[in-house]
Amino acid sequence: MTTAIKVWDIATRSFHWSLVVCFFIAYITGDEGNLLHVYSSYIIIGLLAFRLIWGFIGPKYVRFSNFIHGIQPTLSYLRSILIARPSYYLGHNPLGGWMIVMLLVSLTMTSWTGLELYAIEGKGPLATVTIELVETAQANGDDDKHERENEKGEDWLEELHEALAGFTLFLVFVHIGGVLLSSLLHRENLIKAMWTGYKTPPDGFNED
Image (tube, rainbow, N blue to C red; front, side, top):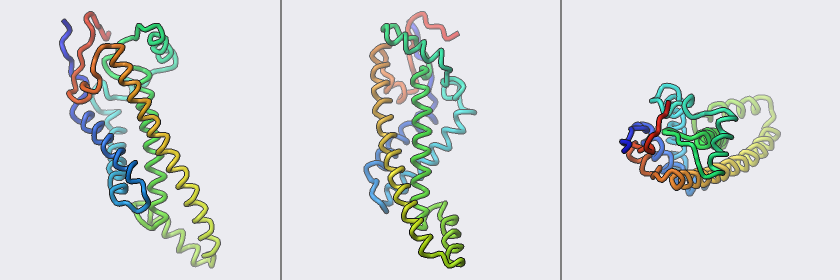
């Protein structure tokens, strides 16, 4: 019988579940000016920065080089699913790997647009740049023009921010569906694995 293998380190597991909690809080408190939304979003940004660094220097199975696969391996894995004989990966499978990338990119874009919106209100780390633009416009006597452009920019950013948040939520549901499907096909509890850090590969599994 194959023994359990440590796959996910404590830092990765903490990142994962912290991100789940913070995204849930940020999404349901999306009303403008809500401090819970702001603080949870700041934590998300910090978590994303950590995951980017950890993807290069972290343990084997959390590195981008381990789970970002090319087109052929990804298509091959997809075919193995369609014939109900999925290839087994101790870390993220090719489809799961690309889902992680999409989630990280989508969350980053959502966070960036959120920071830009907050800066328009004169708050947050990007506010200094916005204030300097306002002061320049005032010095040039372009207050009205700048205000109109500012309102248009804010409306556009707000729509983009909401669209990205919605798209991220969609990816989350797809991710959950993929985790459940993979758990069913491989007869393993991937949710539990991300909690404990251990996975038990099938008998005869040889990663090499």
